[in-house]
Structures are given as structure tokens and as C-alpha cells.
Image (cartoon, rainbow, N blue to C red):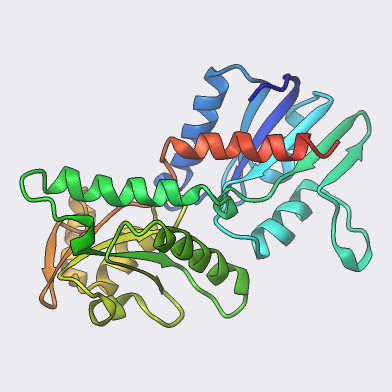
Length: 281
């Protein structure tokens, strides 16, 4: 990043949770990383579900330019409605709100979410490789002997949620790294549990395309993959991983990774989102 942002603040917006501290982890991690690099005058964290809240964060900075980057996977309800509303961004008729708005002496730049950036497939691939090599250093299967599954939430209320998962799957397929690459979903077909029938190989690598770990990645998806609820609950209580890599399920060997939110590459995606907005003025 060659531009001068010493007159600017960067605000990272995460979902957050009052029930799960891990939910906010990636937001704090990337904010600290970027703060240490001294690119911006200020780098601030904010959240929808915990303090510091999105609705109050603009009161904490007075720089002429403010870049707001949502740490979310897709364009949808939160990024197109909730966050703009909480920030007080004004709507402009049926076309929605402008991503660049003046407020007194400040200009607010509201970027696209990090998850829709094309290079996010780099983070997905890094997580997939990491979970296999770290858990099976002596017997790592070749990627051409493995099937890669990207897990999305899926919802009938937001078609963009599915579209971004399928876009990343297409990008990875084009690189011809794994034998086969598929999208699976928690709340849409094909469901998570269908991966065993879909896989062309005996080795499955499953990566949740979520920014942070929480209820879905720690509990729901492992059980959908076939781990017993009893094992998941017991491991959670003792602070152990809820999925043991690799696990043998339905005649397949399965590696299941954590979410991608703490991948270092995401900090570069954040900076690219800022640069994209900066180039518009």
C-alpha cells in the first residue's frame, strides 16, 4: 500500500458475540496487526453484538477520512442493512446507500466485505493444507488424492450467501489442485453430511468459510459430519478440539479445519479493500 493514510482511521467491523469470545478474535488480531504497521492514524475494532458497538464507533475518531471494512463473508443483510444503519449512513432512494458519504468534516468510506475478495481462495487453500500437514506429518495424502469441501452457512433469505461460496469453489477448481472441490451448506442442499457421497476420494478436507470460530464451526458442523453430540459436548467442556484430525467416518478419512478468519492474508485483503475505495476519489 503506497498511499498515505495518516489522515485516516480504519474501522474493522465484526459480528461479535456475548456468548463466545472466539467470535471477536480475528477482528482484534487483524486490528492489532494493522495498528502495529502504522499505516493509519487510528485502527479501531467494532462489533454488532458486543462492545465497542458499531453504532458508537464513529464518535471515537476525528480524522478527515474514515474507512470502514466489514469482516464478513458475503454481501447481505448485515453488510447491506445492519452495519450501514448502525453507522448512520443515509439512503439515497431505491438505489440504497452510497458507499462514500460526507459527515461534517469527515468522509466515510464503507467498503465491500473481505469475504467477497477474489484472493480469499488463498486463505481457504492455506487452511486446507495446514490442517492436513500439521495433523498428519508422516502420512500426508496428495492433494490429487483428496476432495476439498468448502462449508457455507446457506440461507434462503440471502442468495449472495451461497453465491460467494460457489465463486470460491470455481476459483479453486480452476487451479486444478485437488481431485474435486465442492460447496456444501449447513442450511441448504447439498448439506454438510452429503460430502461422503459427493467425494471422489477417500480423503476429505473440510474448510468452513466463516470469519470466526463459534457455535457453527465448533459444534454444528462436527456433528453434521458425523461426530456424536456427546463427544462434542465433552470435548468442549474440557477445552479440547471438537473434531480429531483425521477422523474415520463413513469409510472416509476426514480432516476438518478451523475457520479462516485468523489467516494472515486477510490483513492484506483489508488493505486492498481500503485502496479500492481510496481510488474512487
